[in-house]
Structures are given as C-alpha cells and as structure tokens.
Image (tube, rainbow, N blue to C red):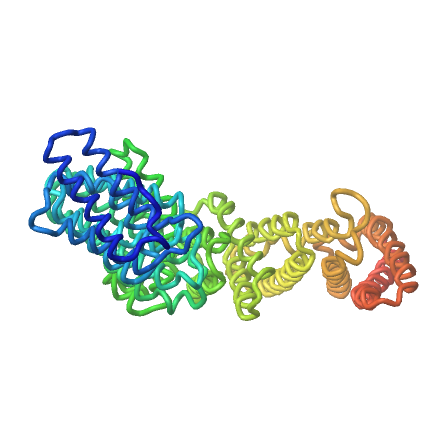
Length: 606
C-alpha cells in the first residue's frame, strides 16, 4: 500500500477512510495467515501515521492528527478487533503515537489511552520491552519531557501486571527509564516546566509500582529490590534537584516529598543518608547480582542521599516523610567530630558541582553551617580515636568548593554565609592541621582576593594562639602541648614569603596581586610589632638573618616594583589608572612602614 502525505490534499473524512482501509488490510492479512503481507500491512499503518505527524515541509494539522489517533484507539478497543493484530501493532505503535503528544493536549490524552489499552491487553513482558525500546528511540530524537510521559506511565502500569520474574523485569527496564529521566533533567527550561513536573511525577508512580512488587516477593530477592528502589528514589531526588528552573525549592518540594515517602520503606533514615551508610549498604546489596551494570544507572544516588537531607532540612513535611527526627540527627553529628567531618565530605559534591543551582547550594551551606554551630572546638574527647590525616583530603576539597561559592555567587548573603562556614570548618581542625590546611588553600588558590582572605585568617589564628599561650603560662592545669602552635612560629613567616617572593620566582604581579600582597605585608608588620613590643621572638622575625632576608628579598624588590608600576601609571589618565592607584596606594603605605620597622630593628639586632 503506497503512502502519500495526507496534509493539505485530504480532508478529515478522507484521512479516516484511508486509515480504516489500512487497518482493515491489517486484519485481513492476519486472517489469511500470510506473514509477509501481515508485516507489510502493519508497516503501512505505521508509515501512514508517520506521514501525518511528519508531513515534510507542510504544516501539521492538529485536527488531522487527533482524528488519526482516535481512529487507532477505536480500532484497538473495538470488540471485533483481532488480538493478534493488536499485538502486532503494539510492536510499533508506542514509537509512533508518542510523536503526536507535543501537538496538542488532546493528542497526548489519546496517545496515553492507546498505550493504556495496549498495557491492558498485551503481554506485560513483551510490552515492557517495547515501551523501553520506544523510550530509547525517542530520546535520540528529542529530550522534551512531554514525549516520555505516556511511555513511562505505561511502564509504571506494566510493572503491576507482571506475574513472574519481577526482579529481572525491573532490573531490565530501569536503565532505559533512568536514561530518559537523566537526559530530560539536563534539558529543563521554563517552557517545559509543567511537563518536567509531570514526567517526574510519573517517575514517582514507577517507584510506587516497584514498592507494590516488593510486597509479592520474599527473602534475598526482596532485599535486593528494596535496595534498588532506594537507589532509584535517591537518583530521582538528585535529578529533580538539578533543575535550572527558578524557585526550585517551592516548585518541586511536593515532588520531592512524594519520593521521600518511599525512603522509610527502603529502610533509609536521615542519619544513614547523610553519613552515606544507607547508600553503601544498598550498593553492596545490588552489586551481589549486578551482572548487567545496573549500578551505573545510579551514578547520582550518593548525591541524592545528601540532597534528601537538605530538602528535609528546608521543608518540615519532607522531614516528617522519613519518620526521622532530623533535629536529633543533626545534634548527634554536632557532638561527634569525626562524624561532622564525614558529613562535610558528603556535602562536597553538591557544593562543587555546576549542576546544582545557587538556591540548592545556599541551603547546602545553611545545613553545613547549622551542623558546625554549637560545636565545641576546645574540648574533643574523641580526638585520640580520630585519624586526622584520613579526613584532610576530603575537607580540603570541600573548603575549595566553598571558596568557589564565595567567589562566584552573585547573592551577597550566600557569599557571607559561605565565608562564615569556611571559618567554622577551619576552626574545627586541630591547630597543627589547621595551619597545614590554610597553607594548602593559599598555595592552591588562583584568586588573589581569596589568598588575601586566607592570610587574614592566619593573622587571626596567630592572635588566638598568642592569647592562649599567654593565658596558659598562668594556668598550670593546661596540658603543655596546648601551648605549642604552628601559627605563632616561623611557619607564619613562610606564608608571608609565599606571597612576597612567589615560589616560581620574581616579585609578585602588580596590580593583579595587590590584595594578597597587602594582606601579607599587614601580617608581616603585625608579627614585627607583636614580637618587638612583647620582647619575644617566637617567629624568629627579630633575628638578624631573618630581618636581612626580609629586607633584601621581600621588601626592597617590592618597593622597586611598586615604584615602577606607579610611575608608569601616572602617565595614564584613564579610569583604569584610577583603579590601579587605589589598589597600589595602601600597599605602598604598609610597605614603607614595614621597611621602617625592619631598618629600626636591624639597628638594635645582635
């Protein structure tokens, strides 16, 4: 049967007649038992539908499309329909009818009815494979959520119709389901917001169907399906949280709530989620029988575990969904330093990833700040049991992620909260590790302003360490090791040298590095004044060799550089020149004061 484009040349009645003729030809070919003609007849129906939804250069007529779908639905649901023909058409119909769903709401309704009828009348096992294949085919054409709502809705219903080998069928279908959800989450835009929500609402329905299947199972296979469902829920929470839509919390809170209601069924708790133990247990359970690489589909489940807690922290209804007391969980973590640090590491992927909005990161920082609030940084009874070095890499990368938020966020309140949280985390470290952490952050930062901030934190630590040392001299019950520190020592001068005489050689770059240079000079000046007025030399800054080194290797080369840049800048009358002057002026003032202090101390040094 030759297929011609129906648009423009045929009216609705003619379209109906031609489609009926194609369907009648299908029935007759199957009644005759001629398999070759049967295949051709099915292909003719599919090609005719394709010609309607893709008429080349002509405009698609919504009325024609709706009429065609209604005719297909009428044929399938007719009592006189041949079930063999219906099953043969089911092999191809899902792929073609989903192409109609974006044309009109009516087209979507009819397409969903067609798929629902196939679900009710065809083999669940066969149809599950057909729907997954249709999803896989369509995702290569378009990532618009609207195309996949009928397909995933059909899969959700097919799951409930499966009579045997439930676990195997779920495991076979989830990769296609999650591929669709992952791809659509990357393409979320405001025009698709409603469809995006409906799509993930359908994903909740799939989770509910898997929950129902669990009730039919026992023993080891039931435990595995529980674990799979838990990972599926967490993967979806992570995908929903990646939406770029504005006001994501208010827009998707009800959706996350529905996902979260499945977590207790899987044996997940807020404590197990934020500590990572629930995800690890689920992954271990699934990995025992993971022959087809199913775990690869849950690549964001660890993120989803933390995000589930963040959503619970933001919204009371989500918090209640797990049946857990989040406040009690956070109190428990606050009281245990190693658990705090483990949670900090768990939050790192959310803070560092570009896939999550500033709104999500704000609440992540807020949760982290809440955990750090109320902790006692002076008394840690569990310190002897902690392997500090094992936590340092994770803490370091988390602090770097917080730095990037401080630099990149446009919201001043987020930048301020991020800085306060960074200070709290650094203060939670033992003094020796605190110094190493600040030094690592300074040496690995590419942001001059951030280096300046970190050097200012070093100065604060010197003051705190000096005050603690002074008070401990009059307090005999304080352990002697608490008087020792790395900040109020020669190590502080090493940090000054990193800025004033960079390891790569030469003086610092001005005016680009004006901020860190100013902070380093202020730190050097502060140490000089503190040691000379206190008649101490803990840092070694007052020794003659150190003074000469600072004078000849740091200060004089910097003076030459500043003078040269200033002279060159005076020739320029642009706005940029004004900015350069404003940046160099405070550097020049502090530099000259440092030179005076060094020269004065050199006169009195031995």
